[in-house]
Image 1 (tube, one colour):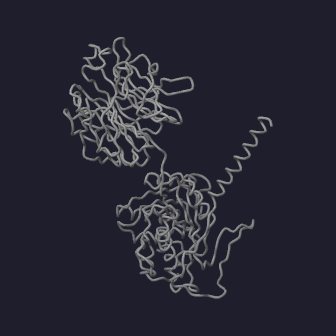
Image 2: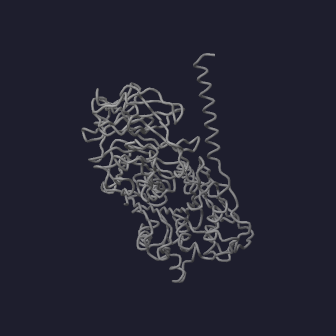
Image 3: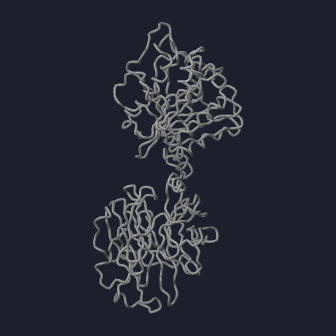
Length: 601
């Protein structure tokens, strides 16, 4: 067999497997919503009718008698998923289940949201004792059904939303404002309140001059009382408990006036309910996921809204924790979307003021995301102390009580504890904290008077809970004065970036060492990866599959960076920008919502 034929067969096999995976991922099933439909009337001859287009495709459904949920579960990798019940539109006369149902469900599925297309009963005196509440009964029960089956479907019960198009938007907004209405006897106390709503060119109001007359007439009747009109004009039913909402409408909508969305938005705003509205110049009515012009952008805007509200995992952004001056004012933060341009948060003021240690400084902050979901931070508290600072946070805003960890207190001749870092070992679920210290009398063969007698080596301790710590040990002795080590997982082993602190003959550059194990032993240090300048405080991260190392150009009072390429380490210092005065810090990836919340501070 030739290499080419062998390759072709492998490609065919991979294509087949990929197609099977996509097929399995796209498959959906439909379940009945009720065991016993509340308020139902049996009507002979009243049967579900499909709407068929000129090509023979079923595009809508009329005369629904058996409500169902069509399930589109999102792929997941362990985390609980957000979910959305979709209410297709159709003027309460039919359900546009393809354009405003299945297609939308597949899009939500693709962005990480499990979707459930609701085939709800359309108002009819022939099959309902009270046609005004029939659709709401189905909507309430759909939310309850998702919550009851959350474990089976891997759903987060605090992230269950409702979505509606046109008259389906009226049903979704009705549920959002009438979720506590007792319209049937529920078998348990499961909440029917959606956690969020997404309303696309929705009918909101039943008021003349703004409503969609067909939807109004089908739901509450052409000559409905003023009380009924007010009850189902959902802009009048908004209160502070109404779910956060995302709204989309076209200004030139001649079927459902844009004022429906505007008035609902204003009611949400008045009641201080989080809301975002996108109004497009054109698009008319019924554009679904978008057909032309700017209205095609709403799914992207919605995806960003879902990410910003923590409902889906947004694209990772980068956060830089650093200090300024001597570290007196504490923790500073900056962010970047590309790893090149960094912008200070909170107008470059401190997020956390140091409280522990001899000098109460917060220099060289190192932050990591731990296996417990918390952000853990250590820092240098003093020039001459025998311990380090520690605190943790869920969101990088609210921090635990600061603690002093006396990692070198057992060494009588220890002069300092500088630039602590943390690396987490997922396999053993252990944190290794490591730092640079000089112990007078040790490693005298490399001691120099040029550095005030400092002769650092890297030491470490391990912990699983930041309460109990293993005895301190020597981690790295490279045969020279070494500080500012940072370690990252790379492949099957670990890479240490470190600073050669030797002044005579001058080094003051960054080097690399490797180990199969986090706690070593590490190899001999490499040749320098930085140029003819003093570099310190390295921090490394992988961006677009390439490792980038940022560092403090100490004597030049600015930040620099090198990027790993196939030809070696490329200096990209002139391509990056950091806030003025940035000193030794740490870069980490964080979800977009973390940055969004930090921006509010």
